[in-house]
Length: 431
Image (cartoon, rainbow, N blue to C red; front, side):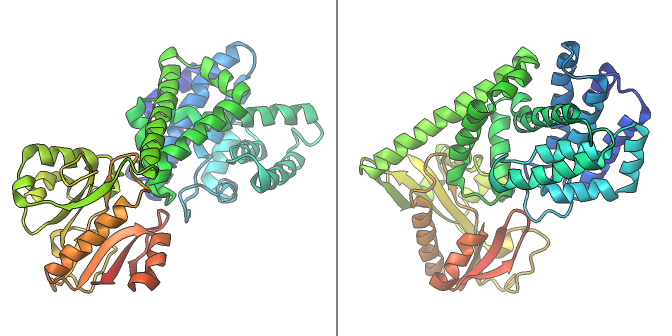
């Protein structure tokens, strides 16, 4: 993406060294703050560069139509590069005030902005306009700060028409911010982005598709004018990527509703099933479980390299979730084994490690559409029964923070290690 951005900078007439320095400085900042490509959250360096790329790509077309000037491109470029940089984030979604504080106080960035001949107050306005959702108290707070920035800037404090133009640029950037990633790849990329967003924001898996559909519907219905402007300014294959993604999410949501309706009308039952070793040695059985396993967010795919081998390992405790009876279609599974068999995050210091008294339950895996129907809970309870039969004293696993809190009273669950911003924490219960 860096090389593509460099080519686009030349095409945009932004050839001064300061723009390349800004790009490299941005990458360096994100990487050193743990927000690089390896950070499993939506708002990482990839997102930052994608927004910058698409904002310039579409704006180049609009510059031809006299909608945006070369100076506008400069403001869009710098604002897009830094719009989500929040190094102290406690949750994945950036806090705009933290972003503004950083760009105001970072000496090197200030020097680069001055070299480009740009007004920092207007960059702040563009970043504030990317606040999402642009409604309610969030909008009111952002607008209050925007008015303050306009008053501080010599370019806008007495020029209402120019203020309106800057707000228009901000609106443009906010829509690019929301669509860029979905124009740059196929549905597989889009679904991975949705999983990253859900994982980093501590959403329950049942919300992934539902929230994605609501997100796109709001974009299509409430941002129609600007969305059309952005999309028609992009190459045909990028427009196709976006609409293919929207339609795919809507198709999956329709399937989810059908499953939920069948479950509600008792036309579908979910049956947790303990699988015998003969079944577990079957290749087709392993392939079925692996396909469900691959739907999990990447940080939750424990033992991916030896997945098939683990299915055949008698030390591994395993049960599945089947449809209607114990011979029905497999739609989920629960799997785990001795804590000592797993390499967990280095921050975890489990006092029972090495005592061979603890079983680790890997994150539950269900097919898309079957989350939220209590099948996961039933598999988990069956897993605890199996662990008890094997004389384990403790169970550890990862779960959402609010889920663990709910188990403190019911199961005497205790937090072992907390993780931010994802709030997907490591906990223990006594069996």
